[in-house]
Length: 170
Length: 241
Image (cartoon, rainbow over all chains, first blue to last red; front, top):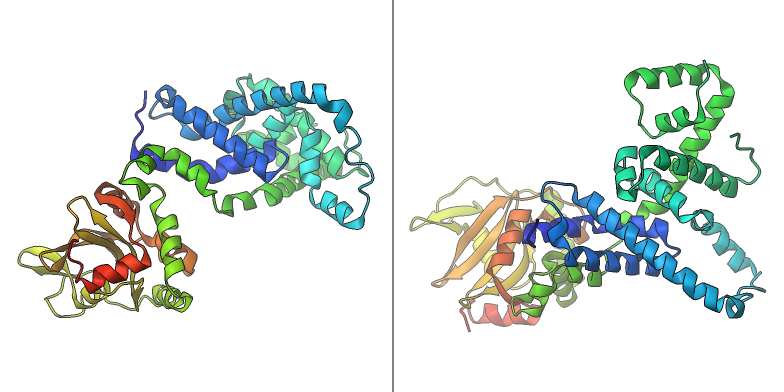
C-alpha cells in the first residue's frame, strides 16, 4: 500500500529512461514506445495503492508495461484482422536506395519485430534491460524454465535474422 | 565434458555460480565451436545494447514527466513538476547563450573557496549574520543580480513562496542551496553539498542536489520566474509585490 509522495514521483521519473528503452524494444517505433510508456504510467498511477513500499518499483512498472503491451497487441491483432485486406500492399514499390538504407539501419527493430511477443519480452527484459532470469520470470508471470526457453528461442531467431548467412547450431 | 546451450546462455547472462562458470570457461578454452557460439551470443547482447541503450540518454518527453505530477500541475503551486529541466530551459530562453557558457566554464574551473563559514564581507560563500545563516558577499551579489549568476556562482531558479517572498536556488563552489529574501537581505533557507560538478551547460542544473529540489518543491508557490520577471523583481530590490 503506497501513497503518492514526491519521493515516489521522483523514483518513477528516474525510471522513465529505462521504461522508454523497454518500450522501444517492444514496439516498432519511438512514438509507439512513448505512447506505451504513457499508458503504463497512467495504469501505474491508477493503482499505486497496489505497489508495496519496499518492493522493486522497476519490476512492478515493467510488469504493468508488459500487460499494457499485450493488451495493445491483442487490440492491434483484432483491428488488423479486420483491415488487413486494405492495408496489404501499402509498402509495395518502395525499393528506392534511401528506403533500403533505412531498412538496414532498422534491422535490429525489424529482427525484434519478427519474434513472437513472448520471446521478444524475454529478450527485452534479460538482454536489453539486464534483469536476472528470476526477475524477468516474475515480470512475465512464468516459471524460470519457461523464461529461459523463450529467451533461447528468441536469441536463435534474432541471430538468424541479423546474420542470415551464418549457421546457428541448435 | 560438454556444455549445453542452456548452460552457455546462462553463463553469458551472468546466471551461473562461480563453480559452474569456471567449468564453462575451461570448456570455452578448449572448444572452438563452443567459443564461436559464445562469441555470437556476446555479439547479440552487444548489438542490442548498442541499438537500445541510446534511448537512456534521450530527453524524456515533457508530457510523460507531466503525467507523474498532474495534481500539482493543476494547482497554483503547479510547476514544482519537473522543476529543474523545465525551468532551466525557460530561463535559458530568456538569457543569452554566452552567459550560460560563462556559468558552465565557471563550474568547470570551480575556483572559489570551500564552504567554511566566513565573517561578513569576506569572500566566503556562507556567513552568519545576526545568528542566521546568510550568503557571503559574492553570493549575495550574485543573488541580487537577475540572471544565471557569474563566475563560480550559478543561480538556477527564482520563485515566490506562499508569503510572496522571493527565493533563488544557487550553487557556489561545492555548496548548493536556496536563499530567500527576508527584511531586505538574503537568508540561507537551505544549504547542502552540491552534486558533482558537470562540464556541460545542459547538466549544470543537475548540480542541485535532491534535498534542494525537494525543498524548493515545498516552498514554491506558482510558477518559476521568467527572465523578465526576474529583472523586474531585481529592480524592486526583490521586495514582495
